[in-house]
Image (tube, rainbow, N blue to C red):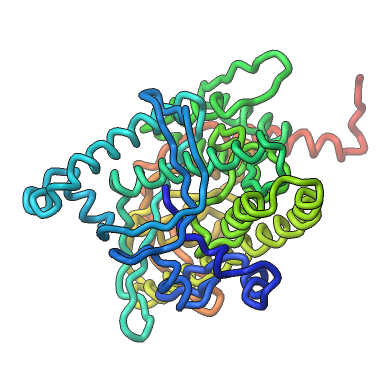
Length: 456
């Protein structure tokens, strides 16, 4: 894998480096990008354009038939790309588009080998326990003035997935290489979830008859949680379980310590493949260059040991800030898109349940709230450990992943809020979960009553 060598141009402690460090990442808004690097770098000399020499960092990997990297080499290089292919065209080629297969006849065998290698590597990651969530990602289409005119779901084909597989392999290989040399490095880490959160998750899935045998010592492994995801695939409770699991996991971050990546079931992991848009990747390249040119002496190691903790904290902070900004803009555009649809009815899925109502998602990923005050057909109680709202009289039950029909009542663009009301249906499932709430209320009442005698 060959990645543009941004570290050659963004030199350490330069004004450009200071600004890049401050930004930390590129931020991708609906119709524009706030880049980490100047356009002349990101789209110019650091872009691997066809038929021109470009500086690169290369990670050559020899991968066996089981998906394991059995040999590798990491080095600075000069590459010349021979052509440019789009994800869309590669997907069509792999799907058998005759015109494109003829146009790119000399590349078809290589592309087919890449597709097969991806399948092998995906199987390897799955077998070791990597947790794979498939989430719908929205593409918001805007007009010339930036106003949203449509929202579609992005499709991920084999080409996107195979490049992802190769990037994951490179990131793991680079991280392990420098860790085994006992050199300071920057890692992308995803720590083991807290015991309390996992215990809560286990109690939750037990309601669906799912049990996870814990090993001696009681430590959860990615493989155990991956099995849960597999067990609920295609079942009504799939969405509920997956959302609960996501909330039980920690957020990934950057660190100078090799703490592993729980979600990928990887012992070593870094970000090496996107130095144009992420500062930690640029630092990963700078470290490679530093160790290649300055050696592995104590002074070099001490320098990076002192610098990396601050870089990791800044990169993690700016990543969260960027993600929050991207989500806020998406919410704004979605609110604008729904503005002229007030009064219309939609199919929806319950995406979250709280004491004050439930969040629902439309097929185009637009989300809004059905406040409990708008559920007028009954008095609803919140059963927290079941993530459910249950009607006291009708016993109608609403849980994550459940389909329903809603009406758009209000859109507040300034607050990025969308309000729906529930359209009651006779097909709504019922349950006795509300009895748990009534039992709890009864116990609280007795505990507060001065006439109650407690017998222990």
